[in-house]
Image (tube, rainbow, N blue to C red; front, side, top):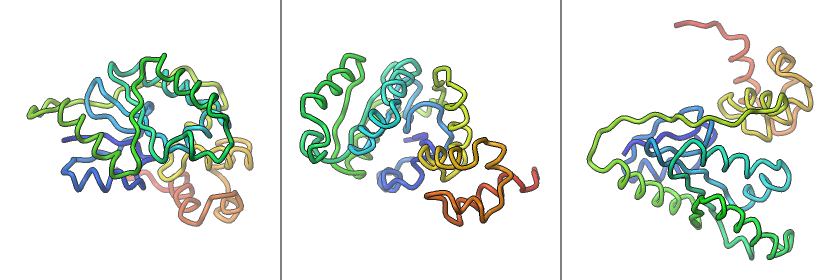
Length: 214
């Protein structure tokens, strides 16, 4: 089974589990979704804590799901972790959680629940097998994001660098103020940003200053 995986999921144990199950993994920069298994089926994976952080702090959950639904005939949301009603330690009222899940259901996006990365991989591989069967029919990731604001566009550009997720991208932009300033910053200055270590700083400098050799 071929499965296209967004580069931000590269460190996830889901990939390790998928490979153990025999999946052929292709890492790509996906504009929409985290895992694509056919021209019509793609998954958005959210851990419980990330699901509500995406909604409450960054206010982007529904835009992500909307993009997924527009791009694929069979969008699927995977919610990974403990039961959301019991794992948030009172941070959200159960009625509010239920309201969020109801809103997702109204978007006609099925939500599947898994306890961990291994279960997530099993769900993805089972659906991939049904979608692909014994056919070697090629497919490509083709999702497109909705129109982005200038700030979202900057975040998207920075987060497309391997190993940099949305949180680190925002930290960098808040510290430097622009994409250009990030790309021209010295290694030592980059490492002053929260959650930016030596490897990430080296990756940015290598991308910005490295020679383009075909």
